[in-house]
Image (cartoon, rainbow, N blue to C red; front, side, top):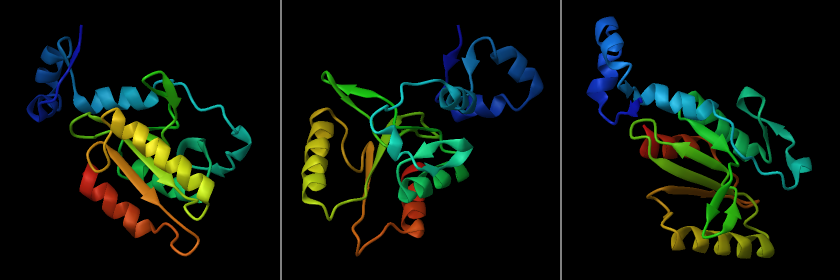
Length: 169
C-alpha cells in the first residue's frame, strides 16, 4: 500500500533515483498524488449542459468567460482542480464551480464564482448556497474562495491571479 505524504522532504527525496526506488513502495509523492487525483474520473454536473458554451483548458466546457479565466489561471499555476464535481452535503447535492486540491498541502478547497449578482433571484440562490456551505464547515477565506461580479464590476484577471497567489502558492 502506498501512503500519501505531507512531508516536502519526502517529495524532494523522490528526485533522487536511489531514494525514489526505495520509497516508491511505501509513499506517494504529494505531486504524484495530486496529479493522479486531477486525472481521475468524477461525477460532473449534468444540469443545463446546453449552457456549457465556453472552452477552457484541456477542452473542458465551462459556463462563463469568467470561469474560463479561473480555469486558465489554475491550470497556468499547476493547481489541481475539477470543474463542477459533485459534492453531497447532508444529503443535498451541489456542484461547486471548482474543487481544488491545495498544491502544497493536498487540502480540498472550493471556488465558487457568482457572475450574475445584479439578478435578485440569483442573489437569493447565492445566499442559500453560501449558508449551506457554512453549515457544513466550508467557510469563505478558509476552504472556500468566492468571487462575484455585476455588469458594472466585471471579473478582473489581475484580481483572480492575486487570489491564486494568496491562497494557493
